[in-house]
Every structure is written in structure tokens, then in C-alpha cells.
Length: 338
Figure 1 (cartoon, rainbow, N blue to C red):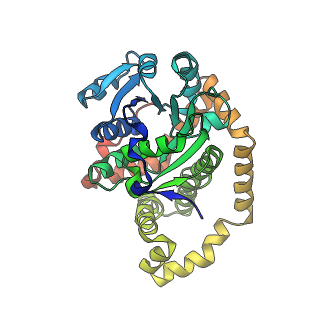
Figure 2: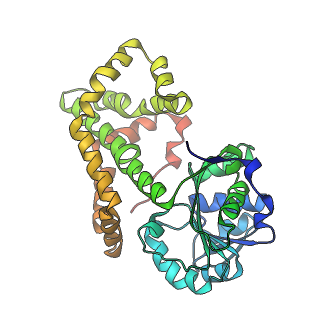
Figure 3: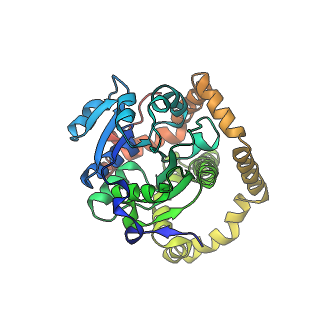
């Protein structure tokens, strides 16, 4: 059974009098910094000079400093930067400013697990990983609910690493919902696998294949879009609310029977074997090496793949249909050019 911590398990004094630096003010950064501030912690945001987020962080009432200065002032530093930029920022701005007894924190274990960052032995190294996007972390905090999170301790230099990490989790509201204990390895490998094989890669490939199959068979692209993408949210929401059983209870008997008898023909033994291969590439570092190498070359293949996906027939049809649904506010949800 997993160990799950709640507010009653948190030592609120574990971070008393300690200064916190949140590096980055993106999806997670804005939520962590504002929640911690509203919880009474002494917070500053670290950003590179010229960052477009600087004004937004100041407008939120936060102290903003260049990254190195923020780390130098802090007892606790949370790194909420893109995976591919963390190692360089660590070398230039973080490592030179860490002091014995500091706590270095992450919301994803990628760089520590794959050893692009090797923290010193005299600092605590921990993780608090909310299981939701930053806007949800912020909104549920304001609602008094909180978003669940994972906690991990990679290195305990002070003997208080777990207590300090849980106090941080309480500061962002996660302890209200529950904080599940894990390891850097487990979080990194399962997170990457979920993204690649199920939540992002698996789902988008399944939706695209279904859309293409119907269109190739002569059905209207607009109808194919509704059947293969638009209604996906309805099904996912039901599973999110009550699991697969609740979803199956909520759909027709015809749909449920098709689920049991046809779904396994799509996700068949070949698909499961590919899932095993993908997991193996994550575990042995193949994917990490590939992604780090891609970043080092300036993301040429990544940008090519992104451009191709954005120009697909599915995206073109979807954009037009979403324009018929003003409640989606789709005009505000346009991905910027790569």
C-alpha cells in the first residue's frame, strides 16, 4: 500500500523562518509561488533577466530577482524550469549559490534521475510533484481543496528532508488532498511512460487513427471529428469522476459491449509489446539521451513534428467546428507558433 500524507501529518514548523525561491513563473511556477505566499511563507521568484514573466510575477505581489540572486537568498529552492534547460541553469546559477543545509526541490525527477544534475551531498534533495496543471493547483488552493501531489526524498542531508518537503506541500495546498510517497526513479519513469504511451502519445495517435479511418472510408470529416475527438472529453470526465465502471454505467449497453469486445483488438498484443519497448527505452535512458540530444541541436526534429501535427486535417476541421462553440472560448486557446 502506498503511504499518503495529509495535513495532520505535516510539521508546520519544518520551514519556519526559511526563505523559499521558486525558479520559473510558468504553469507550475505561478501557482507554487502564489500559494506559498498566501500560506505565509517568505517567497521570491527567480527569473532570467529579460523574462516576459517578470512583470506578471511582480503584478502578483511577489519579489522577483535574477535566478542566481534568488538562490543565494534562499534556504529552499524549487526548480520549475523546462527539463531541457535545468542542467545549464543549475550549473550557472544554482550550484554556485547553494549552501550546506539548503533544500533543492524539483517537481519532476528527470534531471536528477538521469544524472544531468548531481547535487552536492550537504543539501537535501526532494520532490513535490502536483498531479495537475498549475492553473488547477492555484484554483483548488483558492477553493480550499488542494491538488494531490507526490513526494520523494533523493537525499536527506539534514535528517529533516521529508518533513521540510511535506511542509512545502502543505504550503501549496497539496496536503489538503493527499501527498503520496514515491521515489525520483518511480515518478520519472511512470510520468514519462504515461505521457508517451497513454495520456498524450497514445491518446492523440488513437484519435488521429480513428479520424483518418473514418475519413478514408468516405464519412464527413466533421462527423468523424465529433465521434473521435470531441466526445473524448465526455468519456474521460466520466472515468475521472468514478473510474471505468462509472463510465461504462453511464454509456449505452451497445457502447459498453463494443468496449469489451472491440477495444482489445485495437490495443492488442502488438500494442502491449510496444508499450513494453517504450518503457524499456525510458528505463535504460534511451529516451532521455534522445531528448537531451534533440535539445542540444536546437530541437529541429521536434519543431518539424510539431508543425506537421498542427497542419493536419484533424486540426483544421477541429478549429472550424470549435468556432461554432463559443462556450469553449477557443479563440483564446491558440498554441503559439513554434
